[in-house]
Amino acid sequence: MSERKILIAGNWKMNGLTKDAVELSGSIAAKIDVYGKEPECEFLVCPPTVQISTVAEIVEDTMIAVGGQDCHFAEKGAHTGDTSPYMLKDAGCSFVIVGHSERRANHGETDEIVLKKAELANTAGLKAIICIGETEAEKDAGKTIDVCKTQIGGSVPANATAENTVIAYEPVWAIGTGRTPTAEDVQATHKEIRAALAAKIGGEADKVQILYGGSVKPSNAKEFLSLPDVDGALIGGASLKADDFWAIAEATF
Ligand code: PGA
Image (cartoon, rainbow, N blue to C red; front, side, top):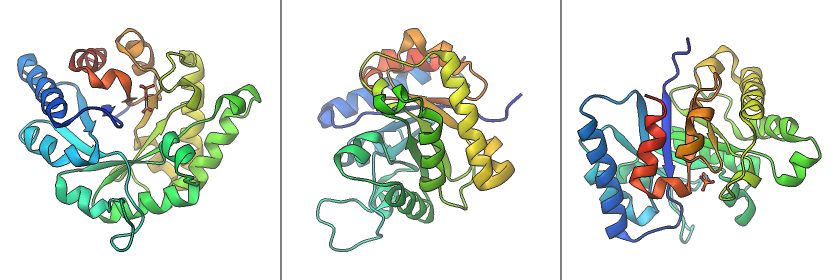
């Protein structure tokens, strides 16, 4: 039996105003309260940067952790519009997502940049959720495993541990589309990702959580979350509704 806990992580992306963030984080906290005992999984919400402090205050005395959606690889300086991992930590974060495919595609982030972000996030005391995953063209060319191995090799710091790193496998073609790989494919890919991680960091790879992301919703959560090498979910669209986010978590109880 794996000692890895299931992590249910919501990536709110660029959605909602402060009042929505207050309502959503409050509703999730209330659901945990009503459940009445410690849920069997870990919870994380990643609000838009400007709402982090507000959300952190709301969930302060709950088991819900807060994360950023991105950070810079420099501690401080002339980087207009960017956010240092130290600022995220200061605002109440314990996690940060790095290398999401939307950042890789829309902001030209390479494996090298993602690695530097993860390293500084760790130094700042944040756990980095390092995202990887193939595009549709890469999948069609049969390159899923190769792409994931290259991204693990290039984006994961050499001193990554289960304490400072989480991996999220998110096929780009499954994000926000309602399409997903089969459970069999997800398990096979996660197994290869863990092997690639082991090649880089050794036996510690067995302890690192590997999340699946891409159109996770209440109706498919159990299927994915019960796979032996799937240790949680990174949820976009369905994390914006407290009922759906909770229903996904419930699939692990
Ligand atoms: P989705 O997004 O759940 O809306 O597919 C997942 C993600 O991009 O993290």
